[in-house]
Amino acid sequence: MTGDKKRVFQRGNLLIGVLFIIVILMIIPFALKIVLPASDLVFKIVLIFSIYSFVTQLMQSNNTLTLLITGVLVYFMVFKYGDLFVSLWFVTTVFAIASGTLIVTAARDFLGFGDSPGGGMSHPPH
Amino acid sequence: MIAYLSLLQIGGLFGDLELVLKIVGMLFIISFVRSHIQHPILSVGIIIALCAFLLFDVWKIFGGVLLLYLIALFGFLHIFIDLSFMHAFSSPILNIGGMFRGKPKPMPGPPHGGRMPGYEPDEYETSERIRGEREREFGPEEEQHGEYGGAYEPEHAHPTQRRMDPREEAKQRYEQAMRHRMNQIRGKRDDRR
Image 1 (cartoon, each protein chain N blue to C red):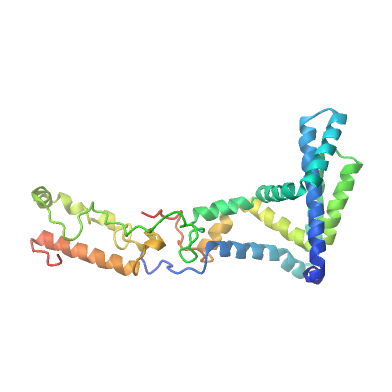
Image 2: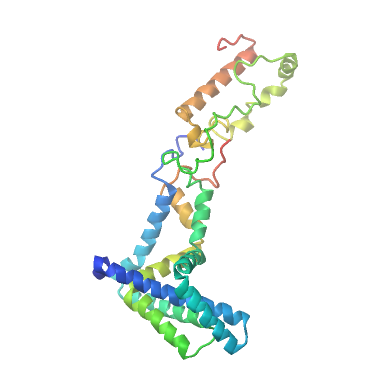
């Protein structure tokens, strides 16, 4: 806990760090698609089922209108702008799992953004 | 991907996103009405009326609110809550977050109750010191919390309150206090006053 071992500099505001992490998270599906082309298909199939279950849950029924609305949404969100919505879906899934706290804490403690180094919640000013 | 980046496609992108947002809003309206009204014909009529009003008449207001609602629903607001816990919105460089806070306060005092260097102890305190009861002020328990006794750690002061190099200032104040304290114990006169 001595002063020499503590990190006393900062790389930037914590907002910039969190935006940096979000951009990295949005790039991950693209990078995965380059390395493993089949992963794009997997992501899109999962996205199609997510859209279908979302529409079925909100319509409270499973009929032709449900399939029609699902088809329109799938056309735009999977086929036309698939890369964008796969990235957004990936980020929201990570948010749902990590609940945001992990991302902010990682930006502060591991990447060095923000002005108060780690060790739990920061001490309030006197 | 390159087609997305061309300027001619951006208007079409936002138009399509608006259509997707309208369909999602229609689904929310259908879900809300069907969960509250069980009568089929009445519910369909109310759905049509609400869709015509919200999705076409006041869409500029309802669309913005719906977008904010979706952002909140997907958990982006937790990020801002965590950021506020980590003091991310108070930047001394950009002067954000200190708008209504007024002038910065001076440096906090030492933890030994105002007995600063230069304080003249009375007889009661002198008798306490002779009995050895006041030796706990700079005892080993307080020194465990930091290099300079806990409260002298410069991270504990707000960045707007730092007048000079905080570590150097804390070191100087600590050395002054210790010198005064040792002079008190030895019975010497403090020349620092």
